Length: 557
Image (cartoon, rainbow, N blue to C red; front, top):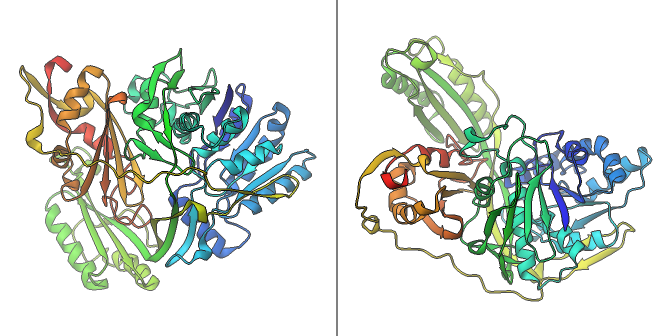
């Protein structure tokens, strides 16, 4: 068994986590996931300012107090903090080791950067590499392995494969480790963070980061250091398994993991076992994260208090439109006001406006024009922020390239550059199943029902993948799953979430998890960095759904 911990779920996660994980208990490997589509855009803009940047500098600061601890405890560190410049971060880690008198072998993985291939308009273009470059680095004795854009789970699969000596066709073991990696890659989301039933957890003030104990067959136990906050339960693990996935076949560069074969079971306090995962050959193509720049944006929010909310909003809209023009303006009126309110805040609605424009001067003039209305508009005029310059708009899109076209290289501690060949066995992609989900196909219940929020019996977790939203829903009682599977069709989802009524929606039942997963195509427009939606990453989409009233059989309550 190998113990693999996580100390970062995103660029900006808890700074102290790396030290806490090294001092909190036994570990063999500590991973850190710093990259997301938005992060690649941020790092791309950093690299525009300074070619020596492009990596997550926070990780280097964490190592200043953590590298010596890792060496003392014999813990290997594997991270994707290299971002767009893994060689640069590896060099910086070596320099840190030299300054602090530590004997540390550092390796890095290259080959994900495909910007030179000329993707149209690309600021960044990075392929999602797999685990085998990491494996080569570890087999060569690396103490620290730095990568660029690998799949998040590969940070876990690589150490497990190196430790257990797996081959490239050990698909079941690789799939099991991939599932374990998917659970811990987002840090405390596996230990109670963002958990639908958080009120039931005794200590969520400061949840501990997760650990995967992975056995030779790929089965795993998810846990955390003893004495840390949060909780590891079958439901916290289920919630994370449903995060940002599509259908039951979870495609990766090394293996296709069958999420419809996952078996979960409690294995003691704060311990959940994962077993039974089946794997298949990986697809013929590799996904590429492409980020482009698409103009500038700026936002302002008008506070509308008291009476005549609609009329006040109409006046502000007309005045600002006359001042800057209608093109690129996106308006949303949030009716947060209450009748006969006892506080000024609860008497107020919020009028949000965002501009997207190719002209940076127009983006700046937009906020100035908003402020200039202060004495010439509706009564009680108030803004929530001062004027500001516009910011660049980034747009993410996925591209795909053949596996054989990727030139992955493991740069070993001695400087040797070792090429990583593509997978020897590939499979043609399986298209997502599109089920018939007519509203009249819903089950007709005999016996009484009660109108309650869906969240009374179901949990949910949601997130973003580019312009699409993922929404996973599970029931707490397996007896309720047949009802959920029949009730929550795509048509019913559109009724419950009217913002999705015109969208293309995929639906994927996962009965082994008592869950149904949805992919809502286009809900987020061009993605988080360009979206004008109130919740641009769809993080609250699941909680909105859980708040909606549905008729539930009383027998399930």
